[in-house]
Image (cartoon, rainbow, N blue to C red; front, side):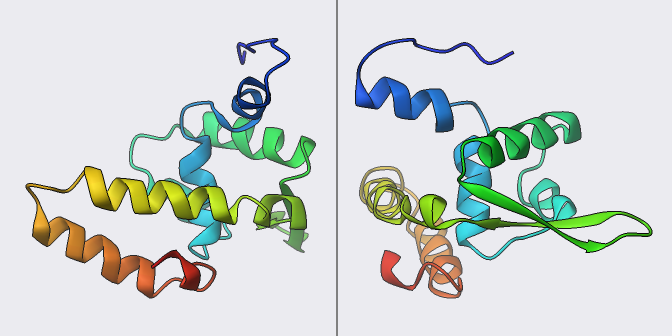
Amino acid sequence: MTRLYNQTCPIARTLDIIGDRWTMLIIRDLFMGERRFNQFLASSPGLPPKLLADRLKRLEEHGLVERVIYSQHPLRAEYRLTDRGRSLAPVIEEIVHWGLDHCFEDEPEARAAVVERIAGATLTQSFL
């Protein structure tokens, strides 16, 4: 069960929606072009499938993600950011810049690999 901050603060209320562990990484993956459940699992080793399902459901309930069925037998769905979800782009962009500027000082090769991966993303062209 998600523990809410229950505060009348915009930061706390935002964290009530996207502040759970793994949620921002799922949003990152959506911005990077991932759409399917197994793609999210592959992108975040250690993410339990039940928790992923819960996070996707919460994002859908809050209008950040839409679930689109692409096969009835077997039932398969893709997940896409809604307009509301895409409105997080400037926030994600600033987190990316901050992370690149402050979290890779001793790892220039890792930083370069991250920049290359981001540069190839379909929805993140403005991140760099």
